[in-house]
Image (cartoon, rainbow, N blue to C red):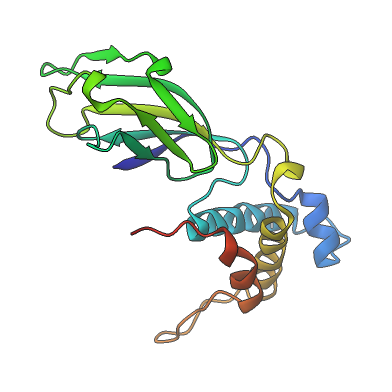
Length: 188
């Protein structure tokens, strides 16, 4: 299964003003740098946890329906299924009624009856599921430990803007790793 970002979040989990206050920066000379670091920090936290912090829209592509009738939605947490399509052998898309799916929001899984689904005609990426994921539309919807991880990582990168020396290993700051550890979605 592959996932493609369709719509990025409308806001960051930490605003520019919050980041500047956390960094104790009172001038506006570095606003663009700080905004970029906040965005990069969010993306890094999302990658490490396999979760979308603020509402985003993603397209999941599958080759076939899972036999157990459960599609794990990554990144999570799942909000809703917006659209489902199956492609025939000629590459034409056919809409599948989203009412055929039961979104298990707590487990970030789409459940369905596999015998009731149309089979894709394409061998690869014959199924597309468009989902909304994230904790909510506002920064306040994001769990505070994840927001703090974004702040700390932004501060770390702001203070350490140089390139890493060849042969050195850069490690996630332990405070950031500890904050995001309970939110990691592990793969089996």
